[in-house]
Length: 364
Image (tube, rainbow, N blue to C red; front, side, top):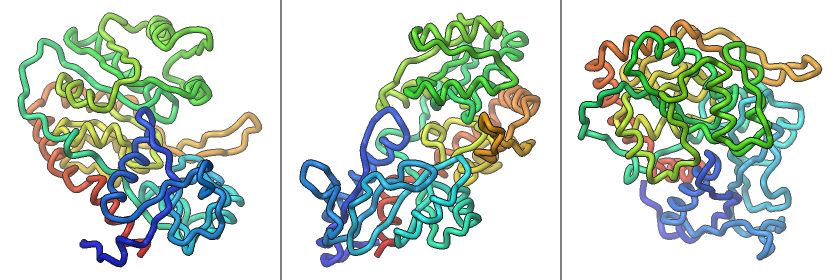
């Protein structure tokens, strides 16, 4: 799609905040970068008054901050208004009311869009995430390794399913002496980490006074895992991840729910590395039986609060299927290789440039 000169001059106000160590931040950073190449953009800011301006001469596209669909900048309004959301919990009455303030509300996955439609939000659409093809592209120089290295990424929390990874790894490490685990699980939000206490698969006791590494070491010890066969990384810079992925054999993502398409998984797949992934929620926009090992034996999971009120509808992967699937990949590495190569080809179409162009098409 080419951008006409008249449309290129039309200002687009963006209520996005970039960052390097969390999904929203990475998504915002890339969208800002790619949209700036196609359109005259202005980043909403408190300092210049644009964040509080209700009469902006141009379109406004901004992030929504929570499941109630409140915008990052409440007062910023343009000639037309668009919003972008990722959520995993149940929508509320406020969600529907707030959605009516926008010409369109984009969800980060088809699952997200469908949940909005289910809640009566008629102006819902989809805007998927992308990958940076200059940073994440197929790894072809595969060297033999003495160990079989399993990778797991995403912030450590119940929703992401790392408890299933640990339980499966414990079983497999006892059976295969060459299996190692490398994880990028650093979590900036202690409250979401504490939700891991809901797990029936592991014991987890979070200490606010302990360091990240100390909390993780205690976790491994409490659950009978051999910590010498687990490499626990702190925050890993995005530009270093491809080199890390190159030293692993397979990525494991038994997530219970993803409102988006799981950036870490997408970037891993873009490197032509095979993944085992739960066939649920946002994952389903990216994975299929040709480019992934699918976890299909999912069962409904209702997450409740302290008052026993349902706050989320997720899906619980089968631990047994996860263990079985890792073993299949372990014993059939040529099949895993084919899936990885297909993943690398499939992810070529998921670029941030394409997502930026898709957004402009939909709001024009």
